[in-house]
Image 1 (spheres, rainbow, N blue to C red):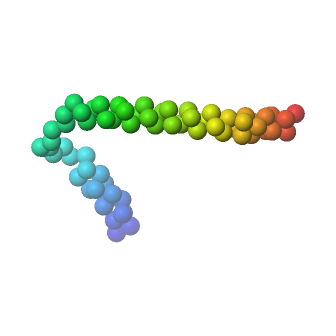
Image 2 (cartoon, rainbow, N blue to C red):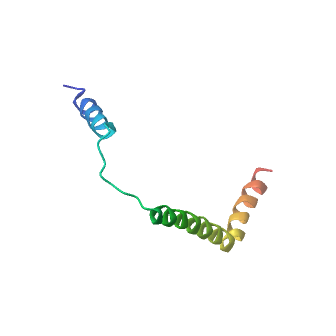
Image 3 (cartoon, helix red, strand yellow):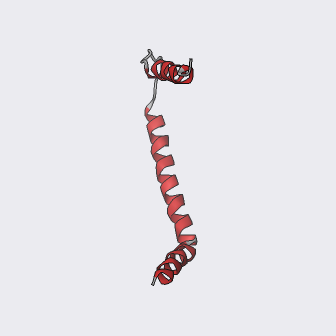
Length: 68
């Protein structure tokens, strides 16, 4: 009875891993939107890094100065 949680987790994983028939259609626009989201996320991250670059740089400089 101790392994009830483990057994339940194993059964749940097997149910989710079992392949089922998917009646879905992904048109070319879906890939295009996913590509645009990936690019927008990357550019947003780079813009945020640019805005906060001084803070990030000072974080690393303080750690380096403190270890010497």
